[in-house]
Length: 95
Image 1 (cartoon, rainbow, N blue to C red):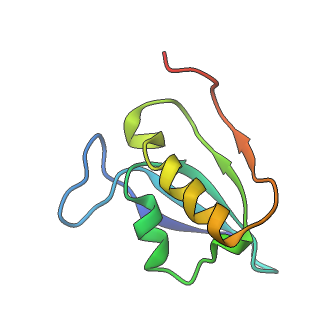
Image 2 (tube, one colour):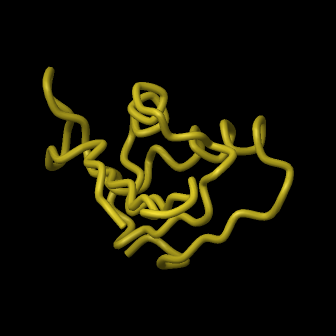
């Protein structure tokens, strides 16, 4: 497996860094997992060779905006390309 950092900024994006998002890619096969999904992660994915079709699961570490506000965009893109259930793991409410 290998990591692809889609965003490493805290709180708000900067001109050179997006907020939290990490893709964990399988070393064999084309599947990948998304760890956190800050706003703009959908766009960051489009700048890589990752395919929404091969996204297997999304993991949200905690419900702060810089870790989850990109979820609607990712889900919309995934629904466009993927006609199957997508696993989700994370908190169920904002605290």
